[in-house]
Image (cartoon, rainbow, N blue to C red; front, side):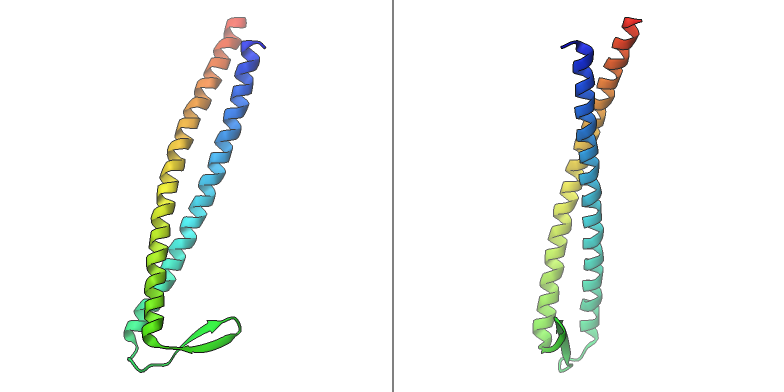
Length: 125
């Protein structure tokens, strides 16, 4: 197999890997945005709970049914949910950083392979 063919195959493999990394990064960004939205919603609920009296009636939608819920239990559930979402945001942030580093590295490899292929083409002229 000639060097040009090997470089061409490496270029294709690097290009495919780069595209996969970009897709993974996009999915992680979407996940991060969804988590941020959920966090904001839960913080709004948390703020609303602070405005309620201790004896206020709180209902939770479970499927098609509204079920009465104790305020302490509801507040605890929302607090736990916020903690969980924040932990997930941290995990996704680390994933985004890792994917960004991998994408930059792969982009550099891609440029180097393209440059080597172009130099080889120039040498043949």
